[in-house]
Length: 141
Image 1 (cartoon, rainbow, N blue to C red):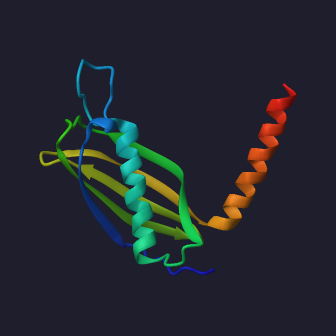
Image 2 (image 1 turned 135 degrees about the vertical axis):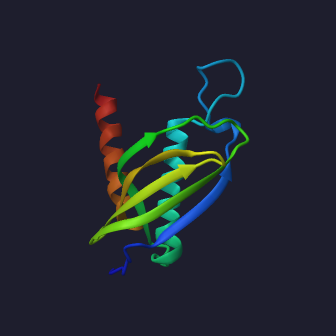
């Protein structure tokens, strides 16, 4: 399937940092918005940009393939953050995004994220075969 993806397309999402998105090692109680959680929200912003603007077919979606992100500042639980994704490169089904996250005071993260558009049934079939092969290997050992 051919998709017409446009450079410069953007998506912005706003959310509130919750206690399941924090580190647990700095001090007792709720801590700061974790780097893995920030990256996850950036990835989802990119995915939603593609799904909402370019990929209407439920048999197609995208998966993350590259993440190059800097976490620039700490953000507490309960803070409102804004996530922005912009398409900066399209190479067939490989899409590259500029991503940013900010709280009400400052930019808290920035970087590059790449996603690849997949056919979900085909991807699932390959995954199932790999899962079966790994299960077979694990039984032998």
